[in-house]
Image (cartoon, rainbow, N blue to C red):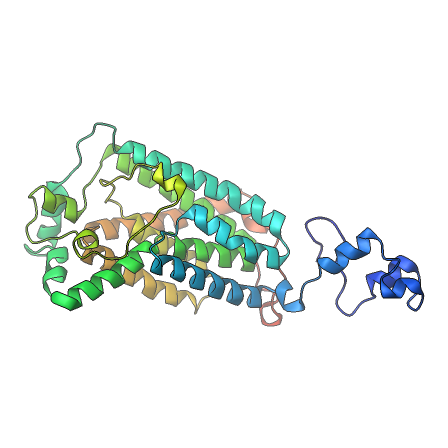
Length: 352
């Protein structure tokens, strides 16, 4: 496989580049004395054979990002997309495709961060948020009960605090999990990665339109405005994980009235749908994670069940549009070359 820089990679089991540069294998050049700059670059750029295969790189990338993100959350640092881009760099360097990583990831993250900034501006557009309508719809669906209130009152004391902290940790993985799935797809199947991030951005823009035209308040907001009784903002009241945000996010205004549709529900759902093709069995882990997210955001009072349903429908619709309408018409989404070699067991499936 050719490298991004165009420099020739030493073939496994092939001739030594040092010998080629000197024309002999047992002269002075064999010891590297007469090795030229090209030979030195070739030697430095060598990577183990496993680092050129998608399987081992996916395992290593997953383990590395999970550990680093876990430490950051434990230390009270919000793992935002700008931080994740920096966290992913060692994996890109190890893959030997750093410049391809920059070309594939920097535009995506830049657009995403721009969308985050716009989402904060929407909160100041002067349109009054819907507070009572979703609360009333929720109670109508659940026979006069609010699921957030039911979940919060089902436990108390230490158990409530422990569950609130655990649910907050899940809540803080809002960016970690879908972008980690993006990294896995990038290493395994670049075409599927491009489909995923394109669908994700499209889904975010649809959500932006909802937030702009019909701002909706979450349960904790409704409780503070005396629309709901018995619902608590657990992230604040239970003193769960503190969150230090990046310098960029310190400049971005948060939007407390962007409950419907729930992007906390949409992101993992879309990630699960994108992961099903390259990893049919492993993707079910993400399905279970999605269910955990759904319960966590309702329990914390950050979303109604109606918001979650809206997020799932948004993700399913975005992926359907991508696969049925966009992919057949955009060549790069069908034929993008894989980043790494396939593992021996996966030969013939990359790009499927």
